[in-house]
Image (tube, rainbow, N blue to C red):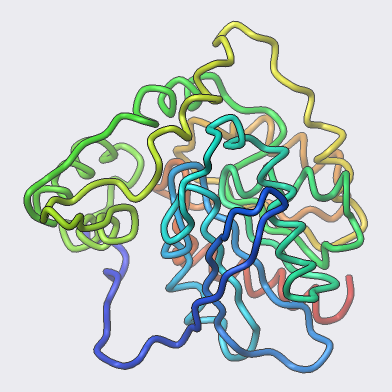
Length: 302
């Protein structure tokens, strides 16, 4: 069985412009801006997961633009956004403030927020703090209850540096580490992922494209600490189009939690993506249909 269509880098000029905005603590942060949409139409704002960056959404953005304006951000310490001076700022409150500063800088009133993992947690907290900014929300394999198995797996790798001499070596390492998450992937898919999550250093080595210190606040929370109750943030999503894409093999968002979300958030659209763990790439057929359905709901205002 073959994997999804591999990520392609083309020779044509990129369809996005690079932009920068300033966080409340003065850090300059990077975003990709794919132009499109009609006057008055909210843009799509894509927020990546814990160790990921704006490149994760390249295929999605190129598919949806120019029908929609798509803005893909690098959270502080990821991708083109520089490391934070204080690693304590690698925490949800800072990320929510950073995204709020982007709305102000780009004069955005509302956006459709696509949040993968950590990005979805940010979206839920926005529903509590600035609900008027959310025209619709896609939560990609994330909910208010995080399965301990997934958290343990994330703790096992985040902040652990590695380097490889070639992209093929990096791809093979990713395949070995994550073959259970993407069982359909073939080597071309792993090469594509390597180029999304890694970068080439000036010394000619391939390394992960994030500040290793993002793990410090994450690891400071004891594994036995009681979880924060995020159900109020989830329930605050009600009243707007909301879609949850869950990987059928996910070890972070359980089926039981996803079903409870549908009970607590009226009209939430729950879609399961087959043969994928945490988290779907959002280019799977089920995910693409779900995204199109969500955007249609945003267009008609329900």
